[in-house]
Image (cartoon, rainbow, N blue to C red; front, side):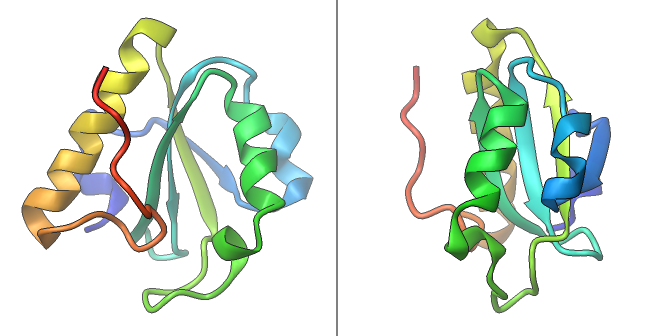
Length: 113
């Protein structure tokens, strides 16, 4: 599944390198790691997007090549903290409906709150 198929759309993106971390806001929201072509590798949420970006850059697994390719873009959508669980669940469900499973870098489903 490609990131542009998710609804609502992730409105912004930065390259998934430390050089661009400071361009990510410190606001709550949901995000998607994708390949250069936009194939979804990971869906997540955070109360602080910039910090989470840095967490993932420090995680070798998120930076290695997968069967679909390497994470190149960090797409994100700022959301009120009260809405991020619902949005992440929605994106994961959209992905699962197409692929009968979760993105390659999502090891387990997040809890429903």
